[in-house]
Image (cartoon, rainbow, N blue to C red; front, side, top):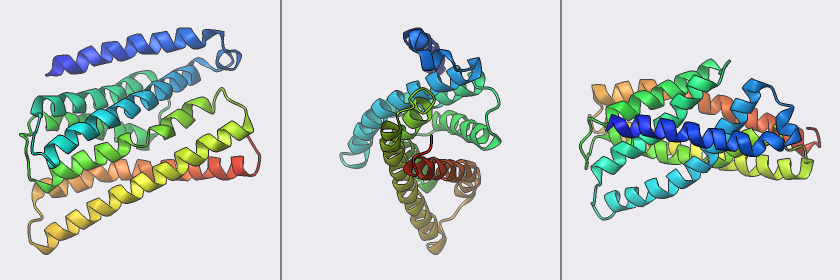
Length: 230
C-alpha cells in the first residue's frame, strides 16, 4: 500500500511543476519570493485536491455507513493520499509554523495507523478520525484563499473569497468539534472510554490547536478586508 503513497507524492510534484509553469508569466506570481511561490502552488493544489477528495471520500463514507459496503483498500489509499499532500508541504515549505508542522505530522501518523485498521470498525476513535478527515476536506476554500491572496489584489474578489473561506471553516470546525465532544462524553458516560481513545484525543489536540490558530488568522483577514484594507 505504501507504493500508493510514494506514487502520489511523485504525481503531486509533477502537478506542482505544471502549476508553476502555468503561473510563470503571471506578474504578481513572478514578484513572489521562492518560498512564497512554493506556498502559493502548494495551497492552490491542496484546495483542488481537497475538493475532489471530499467528493470521493463522502461517496465511500455513504457506502460504508449507510449501505455497510466498506472498501477497505480504498479507505487506506485515500488516507495515504491525504497525508502525502501534507508531507509534500513539510518537504517544500520553509518556516512553517510549529502548530501547522505538528498538524501535518499527526495527519501522516494517523494515515499510517489507518493501514492497520480493519473496516467496518466500531471503535469510537477510528470513526472520529474519519469524521475529522472529512470535515477538514470540506474546508478546501481556506487553502484556495491562502493561495490567491498572494497574487490577487482585487479587494472585492478577495473579500468574497475570505468570507466563504472563513465561515465555511468555522462551520466545519464547530460541527466537527461538537461531534467529537458528543462521542467522547458518551463513551465516558457509558464507561467505554479506553486507552486508544485517550491517545487519539491527545494527538488530535494538536490538529485542533492549529485549527484555532487558523480561525484567528482568517478572522483577522476577514475583518481587514471588510474594512477595505489589503
